[in-house]
Length: 81
Picture 1 (cartoon, rainbow, N blue to C red):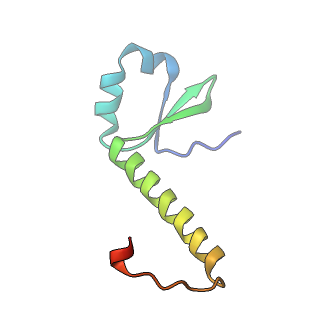
Picture 2: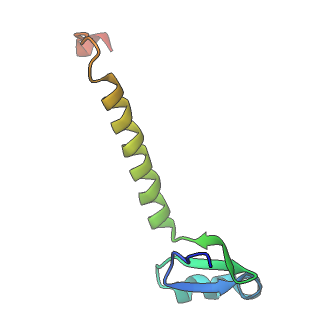
């Protein structure tokens, strides 16, 4: 059985009936959307989604820094930018 990575879940049929009510009832938490009792999607609050995207960007930038760690430094003046 596939793990459900949310504290609440709802069937796709229930979600179609009244999506606004589902969002309100979620009270800022993520909700697993099930199709045939398997997670098909996750309904994630907008603020949580924004934080996830910010975190992913931070991880990508950290990887760039790690890759460039051994490169030769180039001195740049702010006026040159």
